[in-house]
Length: 68
Image 1 (cartoon, rainbow, N blue to C red):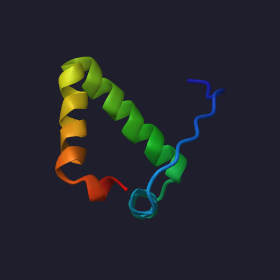
Image 2: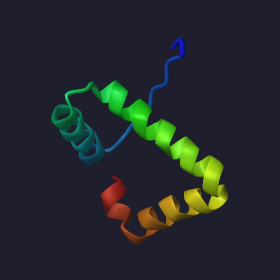
Image 3: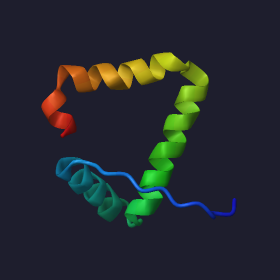
Image 4: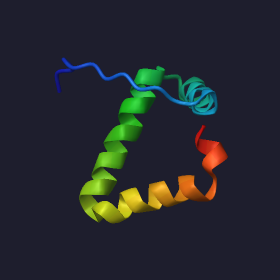
């Protein structure tokens, strides 16, 4: 698939550090890791619909400090 569109997001320092760790462990770039995680999330959403999003959001509501 041709990659011809950019996407920028702001994330917490904690999330960025976790993405850095995953990328290092997997020997891949952060961009590749983010694309894989986003693609996996889209597939889960296609399968489970809004329930998938509700599960993600409810986790952040339970631990709001973790998402900063």
